[in-house]
Length: 462
Image (tube, rainbow, N blue to C red; front, side):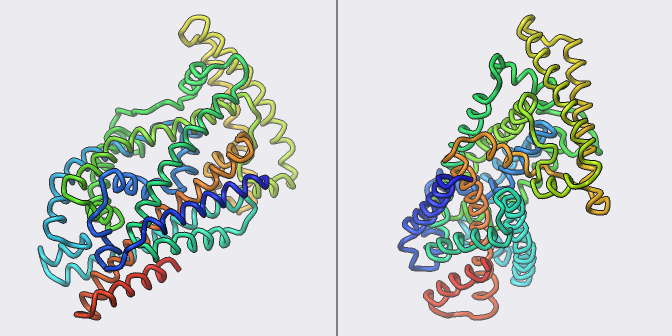
């Protein structure tokens, strides 16, 4: 990245933390620190819930999924709107009327203290491990592209998150999430516009859609019932629906968002907002991945997207022949793509002969890519290698103009911060409310539990 990119990236991250600190002022009681004093409007809660899900993995991995496998991954979310409606009728009014801080606090009212303690402990273990993985996974990908240590990136994100989360509590992170999601939407639109502008002369956005469809990158719905296929209509509606019910109805990192609402109606609106926005957002992210694929039909792309592994593989004797085969396959696919686009424009339908030539060229190209991947796998004792998570980052560095590179990388950083802050805050809340205050140190002042909440936020952040 250029100097301007670094300036833009750090300016964005500093502004995000500063905004969270500013909006988190006044969190002087446990209720205000953990539940924002029940003052949050529906749109802030809705965007915060969306931000907690829209991690850096969403940017890095989902776009890569659209590149290599098309848009059928969106079926995973088809059950989410149904789950949101069910939760609006059941969980939201139950939790609000029970006046609880956590979903597990309600379990004691419904069953007993042992049930509450057990479920709280399971949540702390499960969510604590997941938070660490969710923070480290994008750090590995960013480290390879930026040339930084993954530990440095992990520490940087952790310090920034703990700074505003420990200081301002859930109010700070909720408003930081609002700012973050606003910039995420901007970054997504800018990325798509850059892709469309980078297409070669004569290739319109309609041509791009034709080509993406011909390559199977616009396959949104798979209606068949197939237990061997991970992403189908039925797995999304049934499996995705039950998963969404469990996640948004039982996971404190999500429940705590809508417990901060001014009223039951506001909390319901926040979930219904996600029911409406989530699928279109995922479709748009997958579409960006599909359009990056279309761009790669005409512009040379790396044989291996992981820069470090590509450099290692380049030193082997098998690399040169594989590279020559890859370039030949690229040129043949490029010519076939131009012919297919021209045929589609001429007749407004896709020519069968041009389509078969294009698909054959695509198969040859994918075979040449697999040969390169096998070289890397050979360096790791045959262990499977997948560079999908590096595709979008490579596009950012290769095509975005100076300044925008730093902004989008900063947005990816902040996406990791948004999901991590929500998890850390919920872990601290459960630790204080369901374990510390309930079983260990009872009947102390509110100030004592507020301090414990801040300290446990720092602990979970560390």
